[in-house]
Amino acid sequence: MLIAIPSKSRPYKSKSKELLKSAKLFVPENEVQAYEKIYPNDVIGVPLSVRGITATRNWILKQYDGEDVVFVDDDLKQAGFLDTTSIDDPYKKKHIRITEDELVRCFEQAFETVRSLGWKIWGAKTESAGISNYPEYPFRLRSYITAACMGIVNDGTLYFDETYKVKEDYEIGLRHVEMFGGVLSLRYFYWEEEHWTTDGGCKDYRNDDVEREAINKLIKRYPSFIRSVNRKNAVYNIQLMFD
Image (cartoon, rainbow, N blue to C red; front, side, top):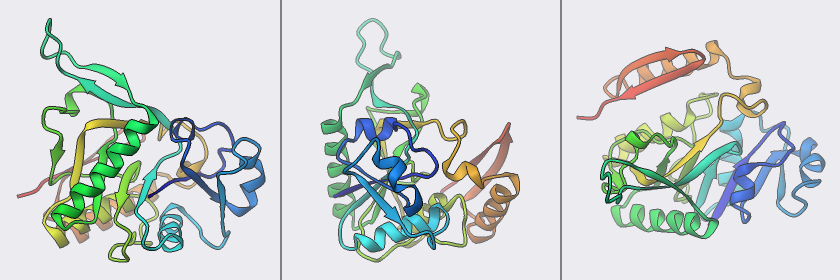
């Protein structure tokens, strides 16, 4: 199993890499030396001809053909479990930090589960808001997933659609639902990233026009799955619906 952290223009300590020490960083080849000053043994250069996060994800999948791949973003904010067993207040959810061993085991179990379903993709809940995590209901079989923390059974069945500069993770997740009838969303741990507040990465080219173009393509391609799209500040919130 490969844990892949795509990164660009962020040659400083990554909380994602600090947690997942076994992960590999995939960076533009002209930035390798800068990253290697911090992580000398775990940096892999991506050819400059591979432009954008979507093409980078596909390049990684093809380089590691046949090996399960977990994509995680490089800008982790926090990750962990939510404990709902409080005797004093059964509705109170306590955050518990996760270890690398625990997280890797979660990844391995997720691959075991998707294979048992005959599926190819799983994704973790990528926010830590207590109301959105349900340790008592650990899985959803029809939900959105994002490549902030996504596993792919890398057998050549699915690649990201490179016509999407952003929202490529939404597209592949919806395509998976269309192909297989569902997608595995893990609800018993969370992975929350900085995402919109950290310079570098997709932020270098992500803007309102790029976001809107990708959303319009999603609506056109999957009209029965898109309930609504709301914009709050600089962030687009896509609400999905499944019959």
